[in-house]
Image (cartoon, rainbow, N blue to C red; front, side):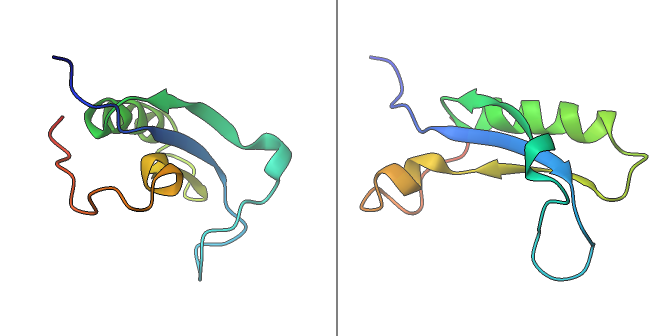
Length: 82
C-alpha cells in the first residue's frame, strides 16, 4: 500500500528585506518550483534551489505544507521521513 500523499509546495523569490516577515519583492517573479507528495521530496527540491541562489542574500525558497491547508484536521505531527 503506497504512503499517504502529504502535499508540499516549494516556492521562492527575492524578498523585499531580510527584516520582519517574508515578503516577496515582486509576486510576478515568484518561482513556483513544484508540488511534491511528501516532505522528503520537497526538501530535496528546496535544497537544490537554495544552493543555486546562495549568492543572493535576498533570494529565499520555502516549503509550504499544503496538506495542512487542505485538511486542517489532519495529524499536526505527521512524520517528515516519508
